[in-house]
Length: 137
Image 1 (cartoon, rainbow, N blue to C red):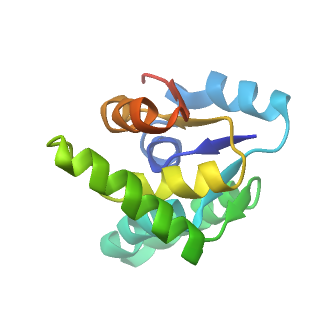
Image 2 (tube, rainbow, N blue to C red; image 1 turned 60 degrees about the horizontal axis):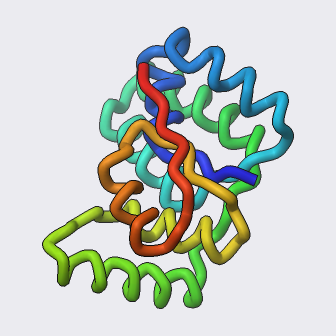
């Protein structure tokens, strides 16, 4: 199972044609996951836009999230995220909420993270071994 990062869900909204092949590939592989953190990040943008446009985006995102398993953020994930984030920070690397996504993915047995944000997740890969499947649009 792969963990799908927020960048993919943003791209579904902003440039759906650019992730069409990736979507077909992921669908062919079976069920994948995302995290409650990624749901938050994507939906935050939709609510910030507001109005009819924001509602349309929320509907599209809700449909996209219904096609994957949404992994919850647990105490165990919080501790692992803090550990990874602390080690990265000591090395001058700040990855924000991506460390929480990574911890949830690791604790739920995900083999990789699918993202356009290769920089942050490569740093996390170096620390943890969680593979990064980067894509471009």
